[in-house]
Length: 254
Image (cartoon, rainbow, N blue to C red):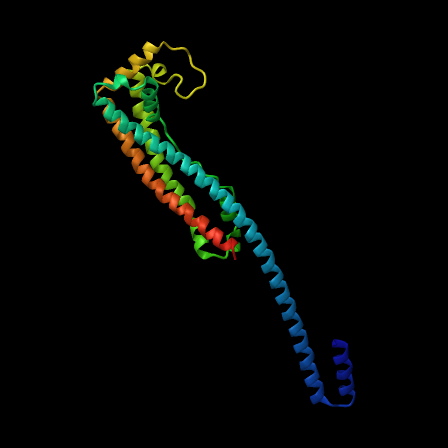
């Protein structure tokens, strides 16, 4: 087509028809511009298709990652529920004189649960890679991009509460237990598959000393209340996780 215009242009020049030459020259320029625009459009379309494929792949990875994180959070919430429930049971048992009627293994398990320090350990590989590599632009949903950007802040706030409990256990509760009771008699065989054949009477005495110690109440109360506050923060994180998963699923359905 361009050769055709060139021949006509040369002919018009030889015939001294400048006006026609100008029209053909403009036509040739327009044709070139149109060709460039079409090429750019095709290139943009191809790039858009590639980005959408990448986005779909990333969304699938994110969904897998956040589903795993949700399961991890739920496991830690179960531990927190057990801690609070065990503390409540111990308070009730300590106020009753017939605690000897409760199975020894149950009593030791309640005490052991108060010694837990559950921490949320989310998988962050895909999210961190997406944020650090500058590929977040591939995600078209602005609400989802905002959620992903703020996700680490949600995790950090929950971890602060978890660390409060961990620090209290390490700095206060653990020294109290080791200084006032036989830890091996209290906890042997509660979690481990292997037991060290500690005399049952020793276990009974250790539990009795624990339940009759007046200072225990303050420690259990602090643990239960701190754990309850952490559970509330965890509830907010769980809602945040579910929002992210909902946004991801909505994008994958498009």
